[in-house]
Image 1 (cartoon, rainbow, N blue to C red):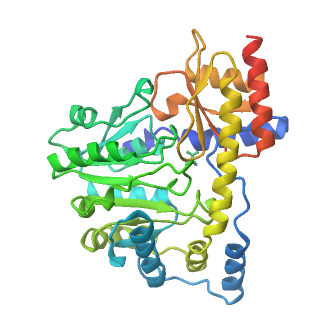
Image 2 (tube, rainbow, N blue to C red):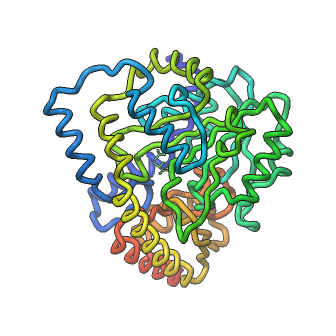
Image 3 (tube, rainbow, N blue to C red):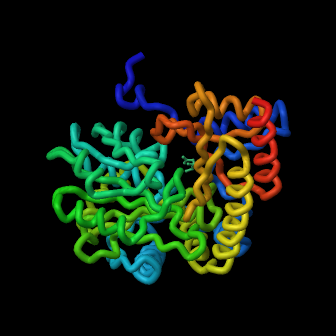
Length: 387
Ligand code: GLU
């Protein structure tokens, strides 16, 4: 059977593979705890669910023509201005079925065959695959745990070439939990100013999940960068709306116009009743804050418990909801360590190699109940102690 070679050769998404695997294993053994998928365990706030019901009752179920409801694009531009200090024209906003499709739409619309797209590693599993599916070359920029995965201009300069078209950054970061601090944002800015042909895609999907007042800089807040920054965000993580599939990108109206052509031919439009739910979600500040506080409580308890286990170290994440945990397991790589934890502790995490690291890290999501987190930490301790 002949396939498009790029698609045939794509690696499956390990986040999704491990979420599926955990579900299948739990059917056999309900005691298995899955901390694999980055999916909030909270029920979507009631106001949002009520809005969907209302729209369905009204029969608001047809095509919505355009790159998103005008009132939603206005609200998103307003949100980016007020909360992120980023001035975007509402005509530069495209509302997409999930943030992931916004990333695909952006990358696919911006790169030509052979162009290079840089992204820091450890990094989210789908960036290299989206770049490959767009016929471009993924260029990882390796960050190191020894300096807290700090992003520096020097590290970016090492990998840039005349073929570099795009740089993708993701802060707060999946999987490391690092935010884009002001000094790192300045490094990024200096790099971009030295390479005027490189565009930046800033994936800010975890932007509302920040701990202890950590500051996460949105690169589009720099007026000298704004026109070259495509900001991607969505509702899945901050408002527990993963199943709604709704996200967005913001760019200049000129760039959005080109991306919208591909959008017409692939998605047609984003669902109208889901966009109405997103409008309500933009009003759910209290609910968002309640969930954030609960993530912070879980972070403190889970990371604290993990760090008490011999051979286990985890830095306190500044944002997002992942514990990025280093295991001292002589002779075992991250894949083998995750398999060991599944077998001996009946806890599913995603091996670090999914995020492009050779070191023995496993990622656990703490968007899971406190009970599951503390039970997981206890079982991991027991498994590590009897090794
Ligand atoms: N982003 C989440 C994760 O990293 C959900 C799965 C996915 O879209 O990759 O687990």
